Image (tube, one colour):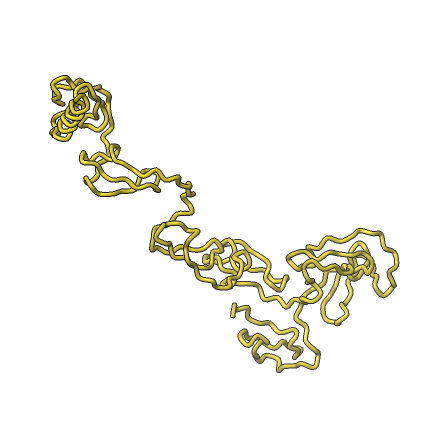
Length: 302
């Protein structure tokens, strides 16, 4: 008999709870105020409007459409908007989410440049760059093809000088057009070679320019008379074209020489006439001695 009475009482209480209107509450139980912030204690008569509530200053709670789902503030979990339409009252999943660096996020469907600065990626639906599909082009390292606008840099021949254009692309840069003896000025990066004095050893730098190489500094004395000169004097180079100036060391191989574009003396022209430069672009004017090597030429960037 007692069991029946207990079940009857329990059912009565459940029916009371189920039948509560939105204006009613369970006496002596707490509930959230309409502002979605303060808390109230239900009075004995069960009427919410008579309930005493806290009076905290609350910031307006963000709203949502009841019954609809939305992303939690952690950007990972999902929430269902409650009947009150207040997001802070929503029931949300409690997945353990890995925090993602904002820089590794993207807008789904949008495109962005890959880390190599060359390939293009398409942002996946989850907005994570690491899951993006990217093109697989063979790209040249940016450092080898770009430069800082208005700054000068050494051309690939290791001799001429170029000025970086506004585009920042080395391929668009205007450069001087000196005829340089490249083979004597360059080396294979990482290799070693004998210095011009025939004694010390140098290690070729990453730039491939001998003038930037690190060399041993041994005091070498085995130099033939043919390889020496009187410091301060000038002499013709081995090609008999450019003029060199003997350095304080008296070693010809260390001398500074002019870098004229020299051609064989049998290459002649008619004084006063014009002819095309070897680059097929610039125009040269034959000097009075009739030798092309002394001709004055235009310096257009072709």
